[in-house]
Length: 212
Image 1 (cartoon, rainbow, N blue to C red):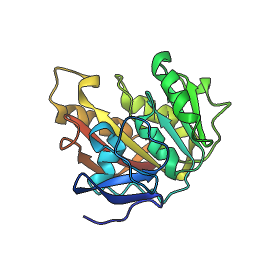
Image 2: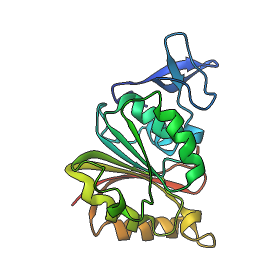
Image 3: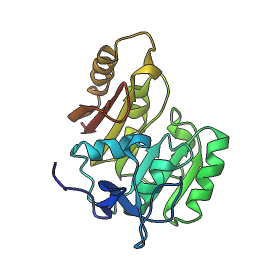
Image 4: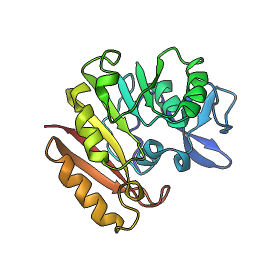
């Protein structure tokens, strides 16, 4: 496994094994060390799983990020630790309250109580030409959400997407769901890499793509 990680993400020892870590205020009870680094739990983070599986995310550190499906802020807190301006979209009010708390310790994290299926509702806030679109939404039509939000991505930007098979169709074979999602995405994105995330998240597929 290579260590081609973004600046601001390191592999550090916790509980006797090497784990991903970022430097920032703890959020969800994750292990920390005396230098201010905190473990990034790939079992609670699809993006963390993609990095653990050595997917080529294209992240270098310092990017402007639009994160869809931020929930209470577990993953997006790590993203904000190493990225630049980070816009965090979540439609459920209760987790957004937690997300706002996470943002209090991170000046570059901007919580948005919005629906990722309706990017027009936050287009006036999110800057154009973001470097990275991270997507982790539990909804049917995940490819459609990615296509609708393509408007924010720079031409050389990256889509980092975790497809939840059970959110699309709980009765279908996950591989069939993944094939359908990829087929839909290919109308607007070039698929650069895919990998099953089952080691950390059952019935999930990680996708790295760029706008066509």
